[in-house]
Image (cartoon, rainbow, N blue to C red; front, side):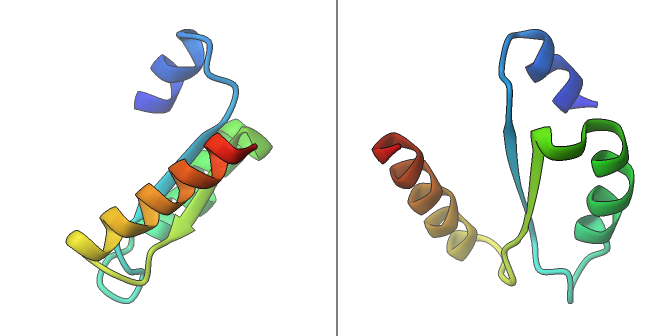
Length: 68
């Protein structure tokens, strides 16, 4: 998984945005499989959206992380 590579590069936490769980099973997949393997080091966020709306979620999260 890509998450393993990121942790190997020294990242200690990953925020993963998925497209809407109403449109895809990716959110449920990551919640069950990735959380089992990475636990609290991985935050899964259901964007409840697709495409450009997801970008606004990512940019907001980035700004909040920069603020501390």
